[in-house]
Image (tube, rainbow, N blue to C red; front, top):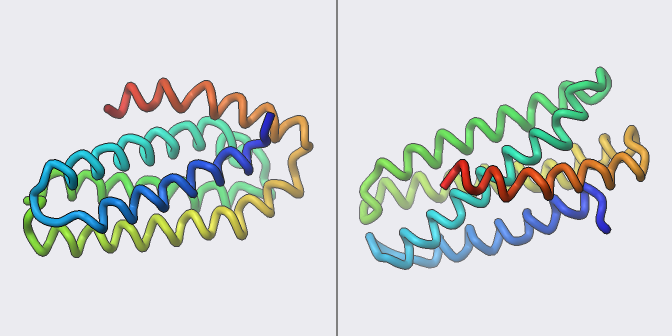
Length: 149
């Protein structure tokens, strides 16, 4: 059994690999489309499940609200990048430029969560609560994946 912080870091590591995989593709290829769609679905499902577990908890605690709000806002920003990319020509230089910006923003977001947000929340949450939040996340993510797909 893992706590919420370990569980989220596992997804982040996977998302970093997925970002690199999409970045290594070129043109309007099936490889790019499939890698991008897999990334979009997993990142969106992760963000939604994270908001329903860790961030719901943080928003309910005055000392963690600002950090929680900041991360939720960054999730919305990522959603907008994904929406833009879906609507763009996958073969255009504009698509690649926009994707690189999304990649940078997501990497920044994951680093910030791992180095700042999780540390602040870890101080405030009991080990038992961190385990419970991981269970909530694990229950929600598959449901969110179906909803996002």
